[in-house]
Image 1 (cartoon, rainbow, N blue to C red):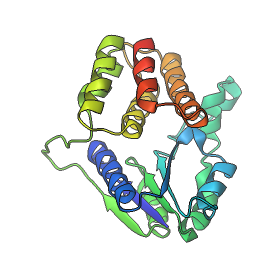
Image 2: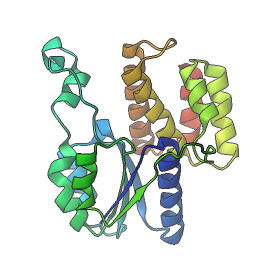
Image 3: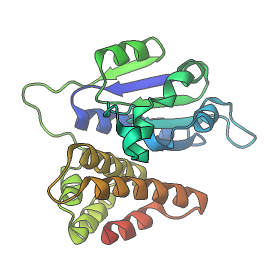
Image 4: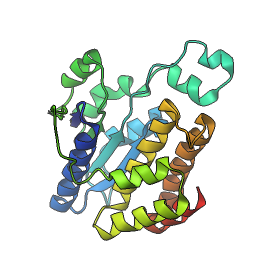
Length: 233
């Protein structure tokens, strides 16, 4: 079964998605949780997400974090930019929507920026849709850490490390902090920044993916790994 979190209020959509996940994990402690970023979506990964649990894990909770790639230039592949070309070829998730919707696992799709056509298509597959559109005036929701993403934007390692530590002290889960940092890295790569060149921001995004994969594979403390990474940028 799938759940969709979207809307023009990106901050609130992200905060509410992670809050929903925290509640679900508290209600069902044996639920195995995994977060997949756009770059990690493959046929094999999505087939695993839809598959039934094994001997020790009955159900999975999988977050697909901002899975839909933005539109890229038509000549991206010809230009030789491998990452851009992958995004230009489309999204692998479309072919697996039926299987994910029919699965007993809980699949959360966090996709704040959706076209109307894409949102309409997803609505036919999801069990429940949560929409968070920004009103004319709103307060910043707790869960979206503006100081954290601003420190990354400023390319300030010491300040970023401090904000990472503060986030953990405030009770933010390592997965939430990683997800927010990775979202901001992709945002920097797509929109540009005075502090970060596009190639540097793309490298930043890929480094965060590798960090998460290595922490899972080697059973490392994700919070400690994020602190080390923050000081290395």
